[in-house]
Image (spheres, rainbow, N blue to C red):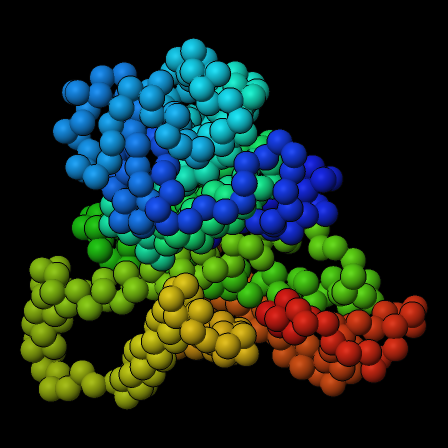
Length: 492
């Protein structure tokens, strides 16, 4: 997982290179090499996993414990387990693998650890449980030490198994640039990718990272849930409640499969439309202002940030719709209905029930739906970090923008062939409510229409000039070179 939490840094940090090598008077040395001794204060699960990873990386490890004899069997034989007072004398770099409430127990060691670098790896049980971060609290207790916040986003499992994919990022912050560089050097030796987060005040945000559960997925999932409830109730009123109230028919058996199979594609279709809606709004915003240098509204920025997650939720629901559709003929109710239709035809001496128009409609409907699901699968696969990192920016934007919009067009054709002429039949308007597919078509057709309008030369050329730096007041000539991010910043 890639963390993108902006954290304010002090002015002195802005003039320093990330993980820089400038030496401060009160900071620890910047070089950590294999073979150096690293200390660990604490004997919990994380401390044991940390000791194992340090040993694998070529470091010597000394562990400080209040009961060395009891704890020595928990650590590898290569790690020395000593009393705390002795352990801190052997290492300049010390991991503090203790809970916040046990930090005061380090005060008696203040003389021995004076001038050393302490790495705080702790986390809280709740977000912002205290006004100050654990690392800031530790720095206040031991002002004679340099405190670095690091390794708190790394799990014990990642330490034991080795850093892989999303578990390899190491967030580091400290008021001492040299200490950050020192910990970053050690982190690289252990196989992690260090990310400098700036001053120690950033520890408040860094400590919240492990407590966040899929932060970018909350809005898309909440939106999908609200749409699901709306369309489920809407279809329930039309397909179940209406025949029960007016005709006395019991259609409640449709709830587990058939009603869900009608609701899922509606939500998936609307979510896919919402993926491409902010690109249309961004283009309209730039055309209205005549410049690309005016910041988008916050709600539009947030909308754009969540497009990837909304697209993946849309693909998931579309895949469920495909599975449910394959299961429709397996239902007992479907078999009974088929037998009833066959009996009716036999009574009326009907030798063939073939309807050419319905046959073609369903063939096109199924074929277009399969193609749309195939493109959505390609979009989902290309969103994986391991796949997207192997694509060039042009290839990625082609798949996500061009093919993605093609998937929206195919989904629209899929819905239109499903509805066919039924939108114009008054009997389909139950309780004066239009058929569900007519509701879902509103937003996609609007987006497709806007996209077609943007292809008109008079609008397309102006939009291209704006994205190349031209402004309506003429301050930037139309021939100005395009910024590096101008083309990729838009989905239109």
